[in-house]
Each structure stands twice: as structure tokens, then as C-alpha cells.
Image (cartoon, rainbow, N blue to C red; front, side, top):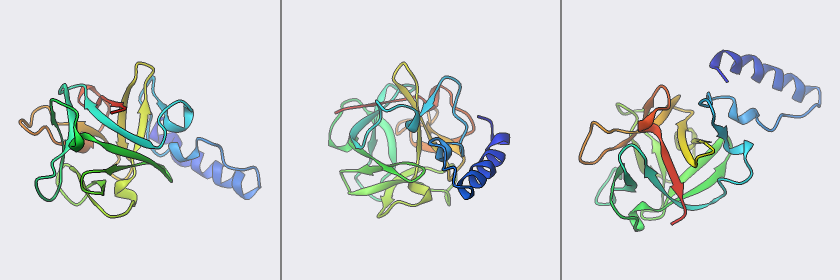
Length: 183
């Protein structure tokens, strides 16, 4: 759905709610454009569910990890194996999903106050910067979208060796393609 339809649809939803018609099940998903062929988390009952997973960057070919060696705990696509630094828990929240890091017991935040909006595991609670939408494709890949940044999460292929994750892509391409797998 394009952004041009988002505001009128939100207004229509508000009118329906005032009239007692209820809110459509997809209303929280219309804030971000779903890429062609993708479905949002509320359109598929099979996946994802609250639980703990590992995230794999398809563009980099490495696991996403939280660099726990020091603050600000950036998320990077740089692990060749899947271990404790590569474990993330998805929790359903209003408007999407939060990503909780088991290693430092913090939520992942798209840091809107920093250039390129890096993803860092530094938040004690979930707010707009810690809320993400997940777009699922039939082939099992996903795109992760930050409504607060208005951008897709990207593994920066041109920034070795850490390949940081940043919420700064206008559209979903190969750098924004991930797999979320059970560990």
C-alpha cells in the first residue's frame, strides 16, 4: 500500500471506530508500505510468534549479532556461527514487534538521533524507536521496517568488517533481506 493511501485509510478507520464498526485487523500495519509480494505479521498466523530466534543477513551471508564487548551494543551482520550473541527474542507490541537481546537484556533501538539510524541494543523498555514491522515472503525471507525512522533495516554491505544494521533504506532490496530462524 502506498503512503498516499495511508492517511485517508487511517481517517476512514477512525470514523468506523467512532460509529462502532470496529477497527480492521490490518489497521496497525498501514503505517508502512509492504513491499510487493510480502505480507505483514498480522496477515499470516503461521509466523512469527513471540519467541527467540536468530537473524541471518542474506546479503552478507552472516548471522546478525549484538556486539556485547561494549556500549552502545551495535547490531552487526558479522558472525559465521550462531551462538549466544546471535539470539534475539521477538515480542508482539502495539504496532509491530520489539527485538530483545538476551545477551545484555536490552531492547533493540533504531537510534534516530544518530546518523544513519544504527540499530543498538540499549533500551530498557519499548517505545517508538524499539518497534519494528516484519514483512514476510513466501520463500521465508523477511524485511524489517522501522516505522519511527520510516526506513527499512539494512545490513551495510559497504561497511566491513562489522556490516552494521541501520534503519536507513528507503526501499527493500538485497541489503534488506533477512531470514529469521529458530536457533
